[in-house]
Image (cartoon, rainbow over all chains, first blue to last red; front, side, top):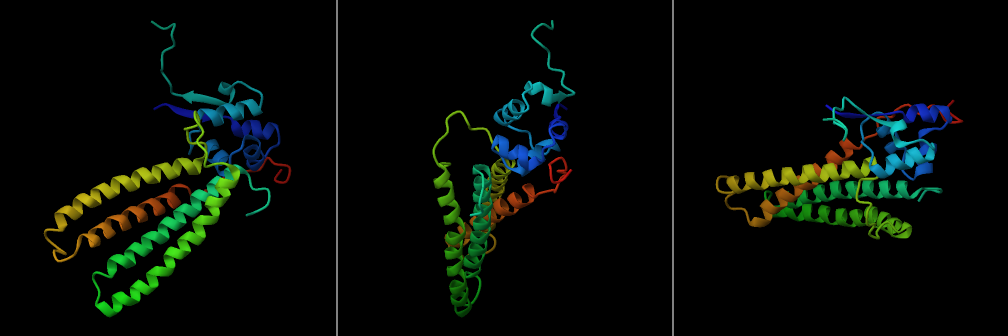
Length: 76
Length: 159
């Protein structure tokens, strides 16, 4: 089954940020960040884009689909 | 309201207060429904107990609604329909669960009303349906949105 993996914790560690710090920067609560990190909550596109924007990286650097076999447009 | 509370925290607090208010309403409906099953003198006592609960619900929810209005969260936001917080998502899940359980309860009550409590008025059965709905919504919200206290050790203070 496809699941969403994320590297928010890694990026937080690199920037020495707490969950509360990141939550404040992107306008959500600490609980939202905490539950995204452990995979309990799948973030909205808006939250995902905000997190990626804050860390100044493409969104797929932080969020990645696990066990996903969706074909790309070039596949035949 | 606590100082430096963000809009997201205000919104979450509103949802938590709404769930607390809903639970108290469920208690109120429980008392109201029980009034049909007890002797008249006890029903009068239950009625007296029930009334302050409504006031308590207003006292809990009204300040939260005011806080929401103050931050402009009551205005429609086109294009932002996705759940933007974990708690908001859990509120939606609790609502869906409550709707489903209420539907099943109504079906069960329709069958049971011919077999037991045959002398009870429709208000009794409506009270049971509302009570179940409100309990399921509030309890499932609290269970779904409970904090698991995950690690948060990269901040300046926690490092």
